[in-house]
Image 1: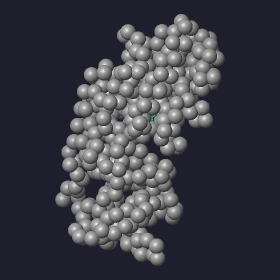
Image 2 (image 1 turned 45 degrees about the vertical axis):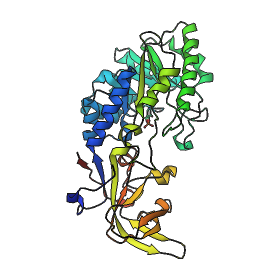
Image 3 (image 1 turned 90 degrees about the vertical axis):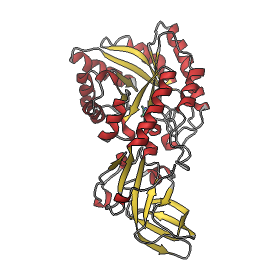
Image 4 (image 1 turned 45 degrees about the horizontal axis):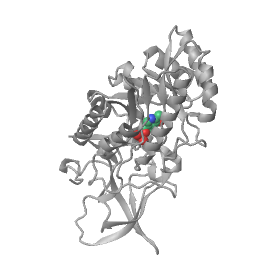
Length: 382
Ligand SMILES: *Cc1c(COP(=O)(O)O)cnc(C)c1O
């Protein structure tokens, strides 16, 4: 299987995101099978891609929603997710966001600090409710991924540091409007080394035993998301190995009888079904290199500029027999607005269509109007 652009899209104005809903559905099906085999509940992380056609399919496949803002909670509700399948994480939940989620009676708040617990307790009390919370711990496990997408080390702002955990658990005893239902961790993204999930399991096992010694039985364990995808070769691995991912936890997590395990996957669900389609505006030669200047830039896809990440780049219309190397860049007035350097492409000219692959996650959701650029309109096929 490889990427090709439907003929009726060849003349469509660029740039735009193209989503293959057929691949999305096959991905959801594989995920569903693996999750059921391991008896794990999946919450899709909306922040990866919150477009309604995507959310509706995720919801219809039977998954819950993992939200990191009040607007994401609202979007999840709008897309048809049941409140009792919604979790809400984030280090900086505002009072308004907490109130919205309380009013909707979502299933669980993943709380990230003692102060947040105090505020949540107060707001829940004011609404005459008892909020379910899971403590998001920072297990100090290195995700071995880019430092900007590592979230589970002591130096990161996320979660409750292990050294603060005893005081936080003690604090909980004085907060009558909260009910502790579980432990939560999310240690980073684009994790391709599954031994990281093994280490995470060991850490959670220790914490669970420690909490049980204190008299807490946890009905739920939420191990977060982070499963990576193959950006270099999307056609070889269009669907991530969900089975191996669940097996890592199945083997190493000490699950108690009747305990429910949850995961929160974003990237691995949607990344491969999205492509940013762009047109070559100009080809410019300098002493050192050829630049292929696209009509898409960091305003549409910021990951390369933000994390130095790589998306597979294809010229989908050139029929040239010879290849050349190009620095593939956008039109934005920033030198970091570069999609790739020294990329081998068939000889490329003005008007050619370029596909930036694996862009379904953290692509369109991060787009901006910097330089007063127009917002793009997505296209769905399948
Ligand atoms: C971003 C995020 C996820 C999803 O991460 P992926 O790497 O896209 O799977 C899950 N849980 C939380 C709390 C997050 O912030």
